[in-house]
Length: 127
Image: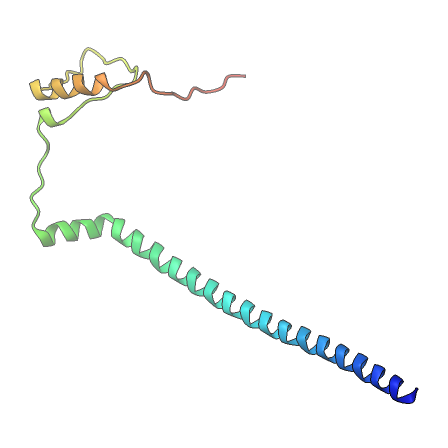
């Protein structure tokens, strides 16, 4: 009987010890995963800040001016045929004259064929 109790106690203590050790290893593994993810998160935040800074620099007018001057690009004002005037229900005053050439009128007529209807417009809410 004593051997039976001893074996049962030994098996129970061993089982409890194995469960405890497995929980501790899982805890350590999770802490490593958390540390790795925090490090990844920190690196991503830093990279995000760097990329946002780069975007701001690339979009800055000063940089664009330098790039255009460096490439010696020749810019010109578009001709009246290349400008399409779009109006959404806004009345033109009689003083404003729009000079659109034949090609501009053809483009406007072609564009008007593909429009579905008037554009949505926001109106103020009056209470």
